[in-house]
Image (cartoon, rainbow, N blue to C red; front, side, top):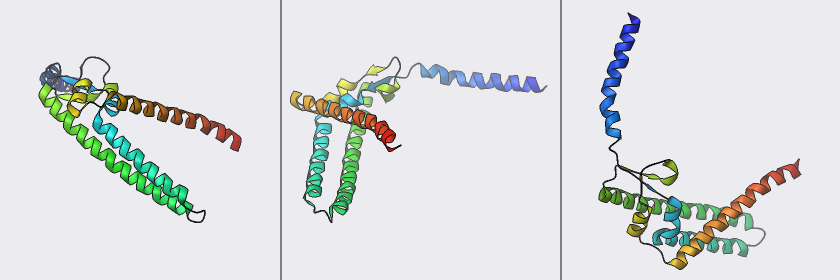
Length: 170
């Protein structure tokens, strides 16, 4: 008797799930390459320039501080930079989200994902989003891509240096 009840429940659940499963095939899915968006749109390049300028400004303050106040100035500069960077990053995120939502409506897409989340299928709408947001000039794109590559190289060097420092400390 218990097996019959389980079988009936399982069968009823599968029957109720068929419309849901059947509807999944009709979804229109788009995806975007976020790195390309960050290096090829004028808005993202503008915000990155603002963040870098703020970093340079604060670094100049730290460099100008005397030995007695350097640690305090450095701490305050880091807090200022983190707050400024978070604010600008949030501003960019909201702008991108708004543009993605508008593009999804225009293209009649049910969902837009990041490129890395899509294994197969879907429609690449990266170039459409770049055009919608405003494509940056070729010089700005090259500079932004060079900056991203330099940051990745710095991060790689820092990660390689950490095990060496740990080994030296032991």
